[in-house]
Picture (tube, rainbow, N blue to C red):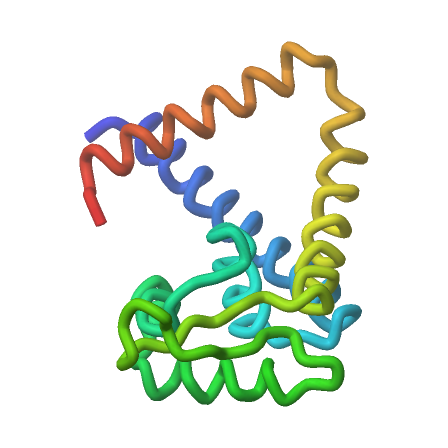
Amino acid sequence: MDENLDRDVAELWSLLFDIVSDGEKRLASHFDAQQLTPPQFYVLKTLSENQGECRIGDIARDHHLTNATMTGLVKRLEAMDPPLVRRRRSATDGRSVDVILTDEGSRRFVGVQRGLMDQLRAVFGLLPDKERRDIIAKVRLYFAIFSQQFPA
């Protein structure tokens, strides 16, 4: 048994959980500032990443939710004042519903994103360029190896 490997695995495990826990706390404060719940934010994020429009069924699949659950979530976003999304029957498939990000939905998504990016910039700005690039390279390598060894 490799004691150094076991020690390193335990330390990485602990650090990853610290990162996740810290990230969740930071996200929560940004969500609160924009009056969003985590599921609402992730719907807005999905729409933002899809040029502001996506089928409701696709969003549900991306978030491992049923269409019915996603419909309820989208209805709540649509009922906000002002609405963060709007729904429309798909022009190409009358059975499908498209969800469209409104300007207000985009503004709130960007508000959360900007707040988090400002914090990352402040921390990363304390490090020399080479150290920043090394961190990014190591994280990429970790995820590449992990994804290859344990595909989702």
